[in-house]
Amino acid sequence: MAKQQISLKPLADRVLVEPAVAETKTAGGIIIPDTAKEKPMKGKVIAVGNGKPDEPMTVKAGDTILYGKYAGTEILVEGKEYLIMRESDIYAII
Image (cartoon, rainbow, N blue to C red; front, top):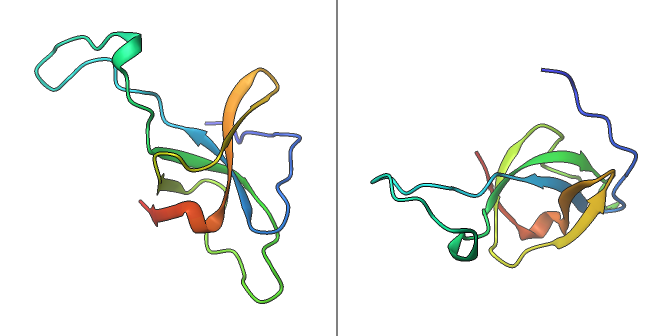
């Protein structure tokens, strides 16, 4: 698996996240239509800022994380959708 290079560098305590793909089927095999799909609350950290002087960053690029349903701002970088959020919006590292 090749390491992903991106031209965006988050500042301070911000993190760039690639959201996980939304589920297309339920556990029972029912196909979920696009209008009913829930936003994933899991993703992979692509880039991190340098942190604040009194708060070093705990997550690093490559970590898989859980975050809040409404966390972050959706952005489009090089034709791909990402979320940019504060580290405090992250609930856990998986």
